[in-house]
Image 1 (cartoon, rainbow, N blue to C red):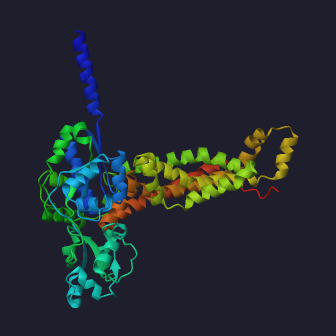
Image 2 (cartoon, helix red, strand yellow):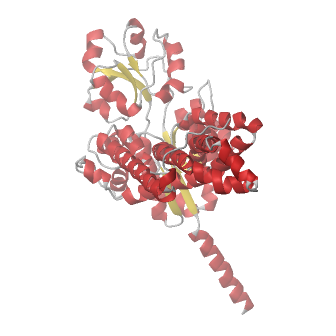
Image 3 (cartoon, rainbow, N blue to C red):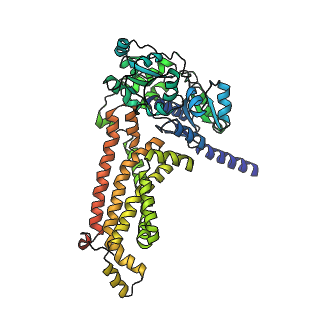
Length: 504
């Protein structure tokens, strides 16, 4: 009987562990990676072994690979050429076994070749190429007046612009970065002459572009594979077996068709992936209506995520910022360090701060996003708290002290009430700023309205982009109005006109 009870307990514990098993799939911020991420997540979900989440549009290679190494995600689609040049920084060509061995030392595996090669390339309009007699990359050197529009990632990659420029002796200066989702339209409009492209991009055919031959074989092969944490096959064997079933299931033309389904027909990434997993061909075009995108099935989820990001970080900022403002007012020697530190944090670019926080906390998503928003919220709260307290008339403090009130009582009964409106204005400013800044959090998988903005940029789809930007703007207006009502409720009418007294 004891043995039976023990067996049942072990089985229950194992079942609970299985039910609690999770798999986090990541993807980068361009159409193909979004689609592949959805395909990987859908395949894993169908295995029924783990609770699967997809963290889409996380950013460039450095961010996604860092998330994989720290365990924030378990698997994501990548390309062998990117692993070779960008991750391992190899100057010489590397074979598959060397890639596997080098990555295993980092706790990362490489496998499940999906079946297509998505190489980097440079592209130019067909009529322009014919007029100038440009067929290969080496021909570009003869036309130094051409205007280049290259993506930020291509400019900064080890296998990108600088290496290509040296290999072909190109005479062009490094251009300003252009988002990949906008580059094709800029080329079609004649604003640039040459862009970097992926060989499986659906818009190459749409805009009648000539992909220039890599006649000096600069670019390696970019075969699509999965990068995964080495413990994944043992931790989730059924899921891993299902993922292995994707091997060689997507050839070049199929990937082009999947990209076209999203970019040219306006279908969502999950719908495109769902058709692929069900064995369906390309679906019908979807009307790119703004209202249908705005109130799509993800609206409530994104709204909840955005509210959590904004108000939880704001709460922590209030808890920390008000005491710091009080300290800046009370302790003269701390005043400048506190105000300078809060101001310095505000100058750090948000994406740079997020990229720094990911390895610091060893995770992506809500935690680093929340910390970044907390830090950005501090300056208005700290400064307004200090300003509000410093403007309390000195005579009023002296009168309170003469009545026998302690410094703590003066602060609680006199100074804080008089400074309430100024402090509340700082909190309101932080809240409104947070609503906009929180959209950046989607680039590291934290969700919110920024998820739509990132997808809209990747697709160059104004309806999707606005479906993220408009509710963010509306939420900012609601937050502003809410704090105006709070101001009327908290601040007595006699104190609504800020005092003009200045403490000497």
